[in-house]
Image (tube, rainbow, N blue to C red):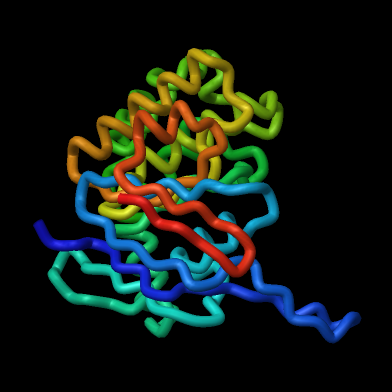
Length: 234
């Protein structure tokens, strides 16, 4: 089975201008990922896990290294140096991201928020809404709330909407930034089941987790992130 993602010596640092100081978030990260595998980034808060995830997604431009992604067409693309237009196309069609916080247009209904990635891909409205409804139901968002804006929801409900939107879009590669944080045990189990189902369908995933029981359950590769250090265990 072909490797879908090869991360080589990836690092991200930040320059604090008012102190004229360079601060490395994490450096020297390397791992390989095949379809159906999940790599878990673990380590203390502030070690740079979210920065690494954003460097893979290219929200942040990495300071060093390569992120080699095998597209659905079979092309090998370095996400570090790829053109912004290509990055945008890959995000729309192949690479998904579950962020920690839900960002959406004001007054957009929950159903439309979740269906929007599919609508942007050109999926028919009815089909997009059907899939969005299935994801919302799977995450126990009551149907009577689907016409309401998520801005009125609790933090845990907004996180579930965020997860529903990302899994509705799906992707050959999915990046998960603490997807089980702020969730009650039932919702957490539902999210783990969705991750397992996506893996079974061949999605590759890189995720940040603090619950070691979830890491043991889901991870095929574990990367412990520390400042200026890492350890990868397959």
